[in-house]
Image (cartoon, rainbow, N blue to C red; front, side, top):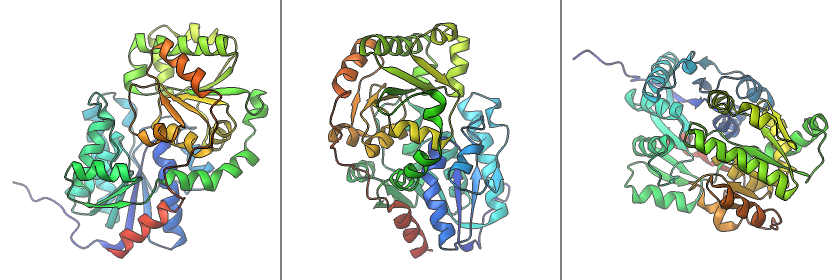
Length: 376
């Protein structure tokens, strides 16, 4: 057996933060800011799971973050999960060996988080999983595989809610489980006023507050299936026609590719009342989201953001790993059948937004940094 390399004498308190998708960058931004405010030596690794400027570079600018110190390149050259994760693991490991940190933080459930967690564990570094303990109980979802594996190899599980804590404990995890709230609350509170002040998205699209719905779709189980993608387009058509509600749809690069591949592009571009846009920067999207009458989405992060912002959400999936949003009344899980989705839209459109935010008080980043520094 060849001699394996380990980081036997890491730099005390030095912390590596792994990001790679829009939600990951948003949710880790308060932690990066907290580390910087305390003058803790830290660095960011970008694992490259997005491949557009709006989903990547502009996100750092909007959030006031320095560009990442390390970037894993050419991840978008493959669509195979194993090959993609292996490339991320290799790149992240090289960055960690160069930086010699004591702590590594990953967030949520995308492939780059699994790669970052594996790299940290193999190098015997202290690993913290931000937004741990979430469960959809849907084994079709690669995100479900990832989040469970990361939970089981983490030293610290920073869970957003008591329900997430219970999920982790029922799975018999070995790490310490700490309820912190969700850092997305920190991010929304820090940025929503700035977004409304600086963004010109409403003027650009010629829309006024509360006069439109926002639609997003990017999940593999939705957009990679031709029939399901066609159903999503039908939902858009019927919401516009039957609810007389204009829809704004920022297209994710993955979805745009599938629309072309499955021959749906011409159909969706011909829908009157639909504003198709390119992927939006964070401030533009947050401004758009905050003033919407309704949101339809398959995004987990959007379910949280709408709950925090007081905007009703219809989730276009069969399940959710954010059941707290359903319990407080901000979200309805509708699936992708047009009839069921329209019923949910009818129910949610005029719902009073007097629900309680279940994801904490905006101090999650502070609590997470407190924990890792106290145990370094």
